[in-house]
Length: 73
Image (spheres, rainbow, N blue to C red):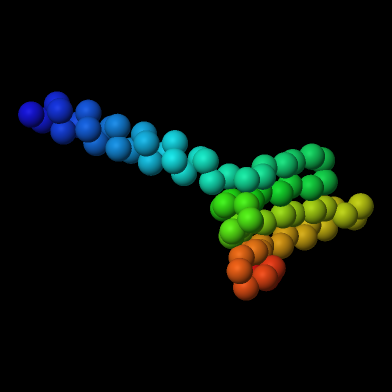
């Protein structure tokens, strides 16, 4: 019985990890920019992007885009 419970728990955790990965919409990275976005396209997404200028300064923007529009956080 205990072994069955452990197997069931492992399956639930695995399915949770797999389901969580499907909401990633965008994952882009190059030398000066990165952008990650999660959610359901056309309904609601949230994400962040980061860029570096020629002087090495880093700029990060977090945002939400949903039925209320695009908003930076």
